[in-house]
Image 1 (cartoon, rainbow, N blue to C red):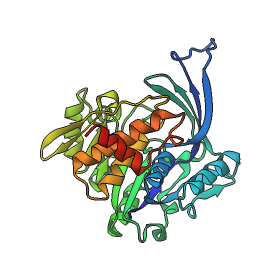
Image 2: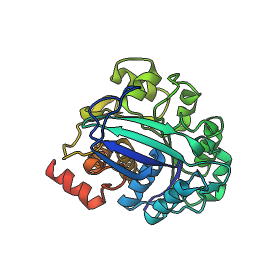
Image 3: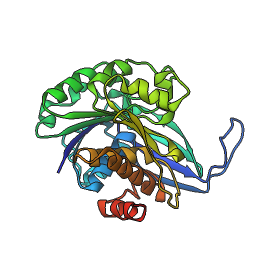
Image 4: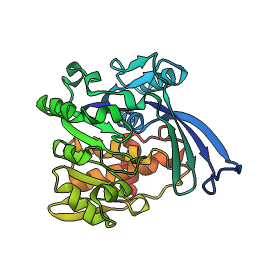
Length: 307
């Protein structure tokens, strides 16, 4: 059984569903549903890994407020070790409002404490006995950016492998030193928009080759097109799985959980992609990224149907 350290942001997702288009200032539109669930890319991935049976330690900063306590309790209830979570009375816990339509979503985030986590908040003791370190939302975690290379170096020196999901850059610069960090990363998990922006190309396969040349195994999430990576020098693609989707919030984070769960068990790359695609798809069956997270038996059942 893998022990995975997830260091990242904590926030609450308020999801408004049935949105037919983008809202405009000066107007009002109606949503057909609403739900409050545990949010943040890091929390959703951590809870997805725990649902699959991995042992997870979570490290993050939250405000010592109602939202922060809600997040910490959700992690604990999922069986995740929260001993290193910092509840900071000087911070407010972040909040994301997700506007979810049938095929895509838009996010508006109040960062709160999301940006406050620093590599020094990750003690060496939290890495001991673990096998892997995962970090999400690089562009939102601005306080971590300048110290992330040191964190990854400590993790690798302790024998851990490292994965990184950059998330979207709300500033639109796609810089912040991320490309310089990639040689320290074993698995890089952008989506197609992020990969193309980081690589400076409109072609997703060109982006895949460019980013992989910097060292990591690159796995690109490509929405309804499935996912792709390089394997033995060739592009390997796996299609998405069709389910009765309700909400796509957190699908990419559950994709990450499925991939890492299989990859850390030494599964072939094609199998890892199929686990990832299955976990991402199954998570869309309910509002939010966590209520419909798949267990291992559900994933195997879906993979069996599509064998």
